[in-house]
Image (cartoon, rainbow, N blue to C red; front, side, top):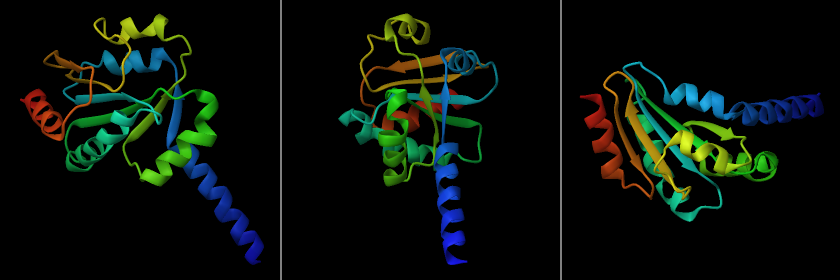
Length: 159
């Protein structure tokens, strides 16, 4: 009986971890970027191998908790290789206890999609887009963002 219970717990943990990360295409991401709702979208492009990305992740997690009951959506877009989902990304998310919405962008040729995300983006990480679909306000940061910048920009986009 204990073996069955342990097996079921393992399956549940495996499925829960997979439910945390949806593998998406550019089209799905473009749908978010073209949102016209009154939601403030914070889209952070990051990777597990990017030190400045990892350093700023706690700010996005804090914003996710702080704005949980308001019209602010935090989306962390991993640019790790899709082949690294099981071995690297999921264990990283579990270790860091990340709660924000996380997707893995499965677009192997960055030259084909970076300009579609943000024309001024050189491809450096981290990169963050913060926008309000209704007001059409939009800011782009192609560097590590500070906690103060993140929260003040979100507040500015809400006004």
